[in-house]
Length: 309
Image 1: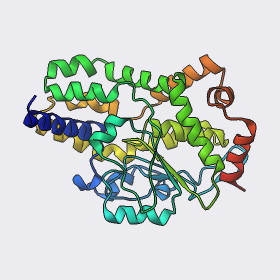
Image 2 (image 1 turned 30 degrees about the vertical axis):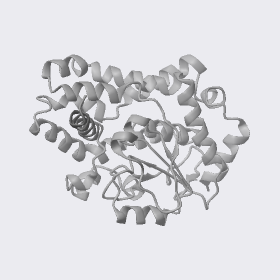
Image 3 (image 1 turned 90 degrees about the vertical axis):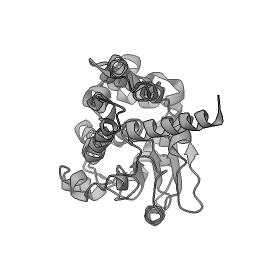
């Protein structure tokens, strides 16, 4: 293969991954602030960290537990990819005082999307959580530019079924469970001077699952944790619609709506993981202690550090 063809292949791959997974910076589409926040309740809007190069960055603070305690602000942040941050974005992250950044992306995503742009002194901790072949499927489908092939791979409910399988691996894969557990232990071991941020590419699936598990472990009601999970759809909606329009205008897809099940988070995806959790461990508590290997002392530290009356 010639060098020209190699460069072309890499460039195509970068475009496909950026468009399909949604890692292009928000500034690329000039989405108005109101477009990403208008449908979010005031509490969720207050949690958002507005950046130009990332659109799904949030503080997990402010949620109430069953016992009436509140999750502390400024301790744990969730995000999408940080590779496209502007200089002002990096300065904004620096003001958060982050002590650790955990990157759940797999190597192929980092290769095409780029490494995190972080404040001086911060190096991301790589904890790849498998995408179950999602990246490869997107590369194959979109890169083919073949509407028939794209329909075969993503149509007729296949994209949603694939996402349900991705979520099941969050529970069934020992490697995935280890990555999530390490991150929760880091949070438990941190103090108020050591905020932590974790992220994947779109900040919705691997990051969404981690956030759901963390909030539930803290005693936040499941419906509240679900609301945090589903908020990704609001923050990403305008951007993802522009992505689909870009794919159609470029001729890469005749029917880019095939991507919607991959771009969205849905309760059916979350339920697929929870059903697998119940089947394997009998419930949430045993998933924490047996599936993730978190002992009672760690869980107590997690609650003591992140909750306030």
